[in-house]
Each structure stands twice: as C-alpha cells, then as structure tokens.
Image (tube, rainbow, N blue to C red; front, side):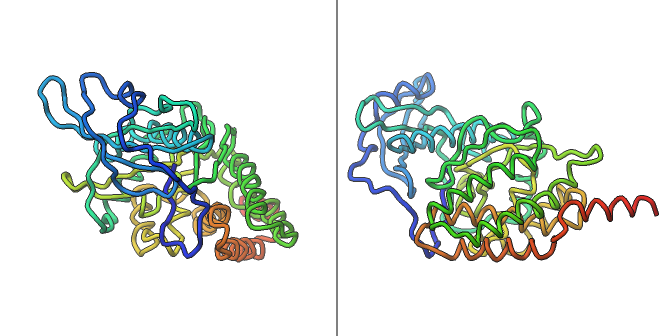
Amino acid sequence: MAEEHHNSPGQSSTPKRSRTWIQKIDPAVLLAAPQGVTLRSIIPHGSSQWAETARIDAVDDQDEGEIQYFLKVAEGELGAKMIKGEYASMCALYPHVQHGKAPRPFAWGRYDRDEPEVFFLLSEFVSMVDGGLPGVGEVAALVARLHREGASPDGRFGFGVGTCHGSTVVEHGWHDTWEGYFTETTRVLLGMEQEAQGGDSEIMELAGRWFDRVVPRLLRPMETEGREVRPVMLHGDLWHGNVGIDRIMGEVVVFDAAGFYGHNEYELGVWRQEWNDFSQSGYVEGYLEHIPPSWPEEDFDDRNLLYATRVNILDSILYKEDRSYRQAFIRDMRTLVEKFPGGFEEWKARHDEGKKE
C-alpha cells in the first residue's frame, strides 16, 4: 500500500475513520507474531492516509531482549487489498535489498472480529531519522541491486496480486511482453481516471493516438529482433516519502512498496515528478551509472516521459479534486504524440534502411 505524496495541493479520497484499531493488540496479531516472542504493548506511531499505524513492543522469550514491530491496519474490502498487496510486494522485494535495507514482513491477516472486517500487516520496526534525503550514491546502489537481483520467477511481467497506489487498486495480471503489460493496465487506469475526473472525449481521442503510436514506438523496439526486456522487481512507487534513513545504521531503507515485475526504467518515471525530491539533479544519473539505459539509448528520456505519464494518470485518479495531474498527463501525451506521429512503423522503416547502409 504505497503512501502517496502528502504535499499534493489536491485532496485525496482519504477514508474517514471514526474509531481506532490500535488501542490494544488483537488476538490475531498475537498469533501471527514470530515464535519465541511475547508482544507486550502497542502505541500509535507514524502516519498514513489510508491506514492506522503503530509500534508494538515485545520481548524475546529466551534472552528477554527488547524487540519492536510495526503494525499497519486498514478496514474493509479495500483495506484487505491494500494490506495483502503491500505484504506480497515487500515479501518479493525484501530478499533482494539485503537485510536492513527494507523492513522484513512477517505476516498479514484479519483481526479476530466480524464487522467491520479489519486487516493488518506485521513487519519489522525500523527507527528512521526525521527528514533528510538519502544520498544519490546510496539510493542508486540500492535500487540498482533490487533491479539486478529481483528477476521475475517465470519471466513474465505483472504480479500475482493487486497492489494499491494510495487507495487506487492496480490489477496487474501476468503478461508475456512489457508492451502488453503496459498497454493493457494503463488503458484500465485511464478508464478509472475518466470515472474519477469526468469523461472527456478529447482526452480519449488523444490517448487513442498515444496508445496506438507512441507506446509501440517507444516499447516495441526493446522487444524485437531477438531483444528482450528483462522483467525485474520494482518498488512501484519510489518517491522520497517511501524512502528513509535508518537511525541506527545510517543506511537507506525503502518501504510501502506497490511492487510488480516490469522494465527497470519504469521505476524512474516517478523520479521525473517535480513534487518528488528524487527529481533533484543526480539521482537518475546515479542510477544509470549502475544500469545503463536500455536500447535504443536515445529513446531513454522519451520512455521516461511515457512512464511519468502513467504516474500522472494514477495521481489523477487518486486526487479527484486536483486537475493538475490531468493537465500534466494531457501535456505529456500531446508532446509524445506530436514527436512520434509515424509510430513504430516509421521507426522500423528507418531502422531497416539503416541496416542496409
């Protein structure tokens, strides 16, 4: 359940909560705790637009050493999707960033109650410093390690469960090609955006050309003539609010993933957004020192704009009272449509002609 950027000028569809589910430790959480540990107390900790969060203090039964856990709780059907998606994402991400670089997920489940249904995620507690942006080198190395090591288990793109961008559920499914994944899921998201912001025939006409010409033009060359896009584990929403610095170890920590297996460069789409502190000079360049742009290299910036367009579609769904995200993705769609009117076919003709020379 990726947390969204809190400095947005718009209002998100944040659920209103009339009660709290973190006043005491639920029996289901007690059962889900690692063996040999006794959970003692719970106190509110941190903040979330979509859930309640708390720290649980515990004791190791053998040496009586102190242990702390992080608990996230959300209600209802949407809450179940949020919690399940984040748990699955963090389970897939955690092994590839080395111990201590992401909170270890332990369990997710349902509170021991009937109505309303309440769901929880129990994970390792990491104390992080307040404020401050991790250095370029540390962030770049961590993200590159995730992308190098986190290969899709069966070579397909997508994810086995839906994940959430704030309160927006993204159903990934499984796809054999990156172009297929990106096209199908982004079409669904654009339909959701039309429902959230109101239907607009001009947007849909522009989007039709964007899907028919721009998407194949920028993605298909990477998957033709024997070339392949390697599907790797993505955090899925790597803005600065989902990255911190471990107070004890001083290391970069990533959390609140909304992961799936995709093209590694997709991770950098959100780094283009002005509200994201990772848009500052150096972060993209630092990453590319570890993993260079995919072929054709000259398309890198346009692919980045393509991916950033999808990020703005997601945020336009989420922040229903803020029209700026819709305006941004319209602007970026138009830029790409005007740049690539001939689509993939024009590129292929030029590419084939170049091979003859």
